[in-house]
Structure formats: structure tokens, C-alpha cells
Length: 119
Image (tube, rainbow, N blue to C red):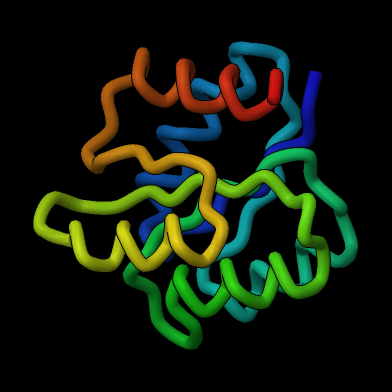
């Protein structure tokens, strides 16, 4: 299975998402903000990154741009709350391959992860 980097400042969201992903057989590495995500991305080289948009230190859009600058082939999906449509559009323009709305539906998360890993 794949190594997935899960980036969210809310520990509860990371825990909930990690539970779904590990149940599918994926290895999960975590970061709680965009700056930490870049360090973990460089060390772990995940096959997929799930990035929250609104975080302290560095938001998900900036982290996405930095990840894509380091690794243009990186597969990244954004995780966002309702009402962040303009930020989701910016993320897609910046290279995000998909997005999942929070609070996420487990089936939607699984579908997004499966689609991106198959691409």
C-alpha cells in the first residue's frame, strides 16, 4: 500500500483520517502545520499528501506550492471546510489533484485516495 502524509492542525481530524487510511493498509505520517509538512514530506517522500487549507505557521495553499516546487509529480489533495471554495480553486490551480470537504465522509475520503494513488 502507500505512504500518506496527513497534514491538519486538528489532532482529532488527523486521528480520524489516519484510522480510515490504516484500515485500508496505508502507512500514515503526520504533520500539524504547513512548515512541519515540508520537513516530513522531504524525509518520508509520501506517495500522497492530504493537506488541510487553514493552518497556523504555513497554510495548506503555501505548503502545496512548496511541495509542488520540490516535487512536481507529487500527488496532493486538499481537505477543506465548507465556505472555502475560493481557496479550493486556488489550490486546484496550484496543483492539487482533488479536494475532500470536512467533516469528511469516509467513503469520499477513500474514493479520493484510491483515485489519486491509481493515477
